[in-house]
Length: 321
Ligand code: TXA
Ligand code: MG
Image 1 (tube, rainbow, N blue to C red):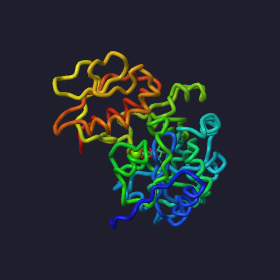
Image 2 (cartoon, helix red, strand yellow):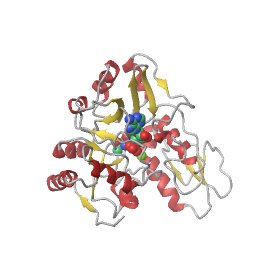
Image 3 (cartoon, rainbow, N blue to C red):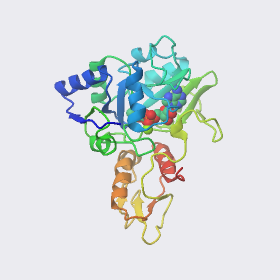
Image 4 (spheres, protein in one colour):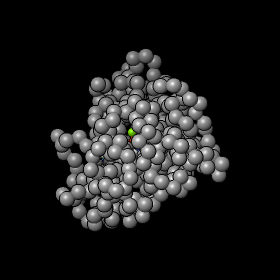
């Protein structure tokens, strides 16, 4: 693929207008959301969507999330049942993605859904994401703005580290406050199912639904390739749930009881802070590690945002394909 000059845009009126203009031309623009940076393209334009897969080297069978400015726009693209309505009313805008039946007349490129009858949709809360969606005034397909299989970006610098020269522009909106990707819930005839833990904890979702949410079974068919092992992979090998690192290992701590840790996700043991630090610190450890040096990670509790953190750590530690 030919290299292009990637523009860095400020999230002011001229920058937002330029971002909307590039999207309308079928070009790729990375933008901040409250979870991670997304790599946006016009979801109605086959050529534009194809460029996402090319820039990320993403397998074509892996469908994309469509971002919209509000729930009204989302309801024109997908069919909402009672559960979906309840979740959208409670948590949008916010770090929640719903997988729902696609309206066949919605005008979405079939590349977005990888030909499936369902579509993943999200209304992000980040003011810069909201501003670019309103300026463009159309559905924006956006996976995380990283090369496929690598760590998701939580700053404009991370985006450029992976995709400089391969995308038209990045809107620099600073650091993403949540730091892990959205929670994905599928709603179908069998009721809601958790497809990916993320920035909205299940502890908030279940009271809203009034019943426990089904977990996707470990042996179930893979419908979200984020569910594949070996994802979010740093270069260094990772060992998890380590309370006493081996000599020579770089230790990533969590909480106050990690003396000698190279970095700490949250010295005070706060899961919100740990989620926001996770991808920054995995990248920083990759830079600190000498060739062959392994990274040991302290245990993180499996509750609240800890579920999303542990999910990403397990994938980062999974055997490489
Ligand atoms: O926070 C986020 O969700 C970020 C920001 C940019 O919105 N986006 C993101 O996109 O994480 P991506 O492409 O990296 O992950 C989306 C996941 C993938 O695992 C994909 O397989 C799944 O959503 N997905 C998309 N459409 C789907 C569908 N129709 N059915 C099941 N899974 C789907
Ligand atoms: Mg991703």
